[in-house]
Image (tube, rainbow over all chains, first blue to last red; front, side, top):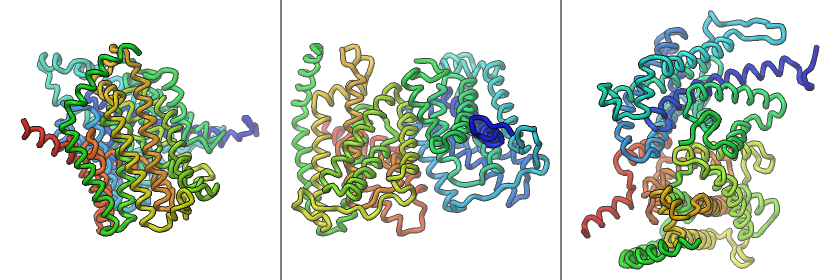
Length: 295
Length: 328
């Protein structure tokens, strides 16, 4: 049995995998935040809460309706996305003309409401969510044991991130979106319904959070506070990556997840704060973020 | 800086023009002080001390958002870390209360200097996210460092004897000491806002590029404002640690940062009395809700949403607006 710097490889790769999984969630969430921010100029503080809602929708569907993982993987993001549309149409919309900070405060209030309500209803203890039959078990890769579900989460997240990147950077709809981010008035003058596009963007961004929630449900337990602390790390990820670039959000998310995993192996005490330390360093060297552009 | 003098004269003129309003403010302050002196005979002193601590905390926060336009979402880091340092100083080092509070405030100032230097590198929404992330780092440190005692916090902190004269175990003596601290903090905020320095801060809030073009080194002004605000927030946290004889993780959570934002928003950002009113309302509401089965975060969240959607000026801000409209 070989050892790497005194660490058994199973432990190292195990933590790396865990880091990659966390990184997938960071990537999905920061991607959604970046898309929303680009279009609405709103930092969606409710993103973590909506991730939690996504997980809970999957759990509720399973527990009360008997709808399993695969349909939930489609239904939960749709439900969360619809919820996002309602929030955007009824509340966020009124704030585009005032200081962007009010958008942050509004979504912070919404996050408190969602988290408080679910906590009131379901308590703070987690609800277990079973891994679907198809993805049970695992494979021995020789140097480590890979549980199938975890491999699926990483692969599927990267696929979704890639698809989103493609849709925004390479399709006609994405071109409209990018154009409307740069100059909404002009795009509106060309006959494109920008307000609808803004609503859909918000819906899509939070649907990504909902999807991350469903993916997370079988790994972490379904818990009303599961999004609260995660979202702050995601904010740090966004500051590090810079909000300007879609690809930047994905790469930074995955990279920082991995880094957290490595820290857990070599210096576990620091694993909670390593992302924040990196954020501080990046701010000192390149304040606009690794992939960001200074405006 | 030689370019400063014309702006200073202008600021002076504006101050003199506002002296009519200042009489009203003086009356209000006197009345408020009178109420605060009588209050402990009518209401539970510990509750009032809580209000005063949070009012000072909110005033400190408001100095930053209301007068410099910097939205910090991590002020709990200063409040909480000062509470920890004060509790540790009073309990383990057996320092007298005045030195313990000083130690707490100083630690918050140092932390404020470090965080401020990082955070002012970005503006607006990023500033909020950076302060939030940095304060979360403080939360994890408070959870893991040995001297903070993790989930238990530092309990049974002795209140001690202030200046070797006043026994703070008596809740009336404690109350008047807290009131004195609050008045000193409020006076400092008032003085800062009405100084040439405060005028420059407002100029930065309104139009930073213009302030830069006038020759002001805006980062320095912002940093000083940040450190001042962090120190005052620390002073509030330090006092709170002695009042409740407890420093715990609750003081450093992001929910605490959110709470002080709410107090200021509800009372009125950028008004001097707003944060005090907001803090009194939120503390009262929370102690009232604690007795009911209603979930506190949901109610707080609803107030947030309503404030942001329908009255962004806050209570004091709306009253001020109403009076200004009437006098026109």
